[in-house]
Length: 284
Image 1: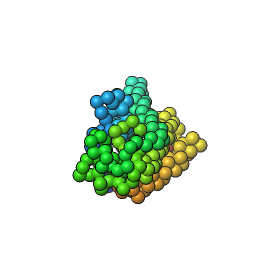
Image 2 (image 1 turned 60 degrees about the horizontal axis):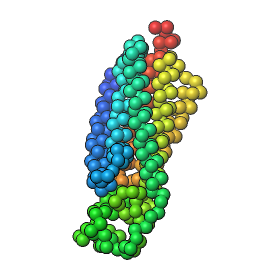
Image 3 (image 1 turned 120 degrees about the horizontal axis):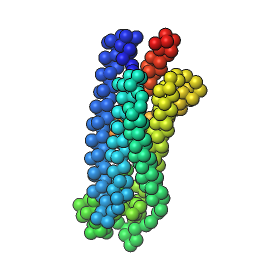
Image 4 (image 1 turned 45 degrees about the vertical axis):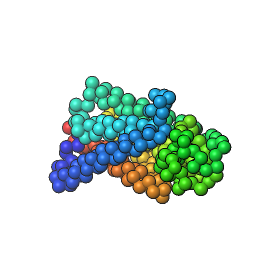
């Protein structure tokens, strides 16, 4: 589809662009491994023998979400770069769109899971008859602060919090003090906002892909989609900076790398528009 790029922009630039793109994709795979291990570390503290299927999918929502994003990125790469326009017909388009629809469903599950977390954290349920974490060393619970879980035992209890009042986090065997609970609420809202923003970016990209697939390269709808995407990307960077201020540097890095991944798709779309325009002007 965009193989003519090498002719229009020069072979060296094309090779550099492709090298950077695939390097970004490789970094995304590395990030995915980090998030899987992070979900596993969280599951150790939050899942029990009585946890439901939705509890499990909620705990591993990030891993499920990342898997859907990888598949979605691959589908956009195939449609906007790898396959020529002449071959984007019939069952090929149906398969690509069907897989993308499945990815949208999985990403929507992530939004649902994050919404449940936000709602469950709104209740403030105090831990009764406890004025020190050392009074809970035999309760088989964990203490969380800033997404860092620590099992409460005789060795750790005295160094976790000096508060005398603690609160349950949702229905998990996890507690925190008021400062920790407030922070968990803020982080849950940030997660939900990020998931919704990415979904809106997907809608903008999907609109552009569908229109260009029909030979449309301009107009208010495409212009609005581009402008909206730029605003949403800026908002994601702001969220990443917020996480970085809380020492979650991985989240900022992840945000920047994913933006880089979809910037590659945006470049594919731009070059695809150029190719469509060239064909329309030459009649070939």
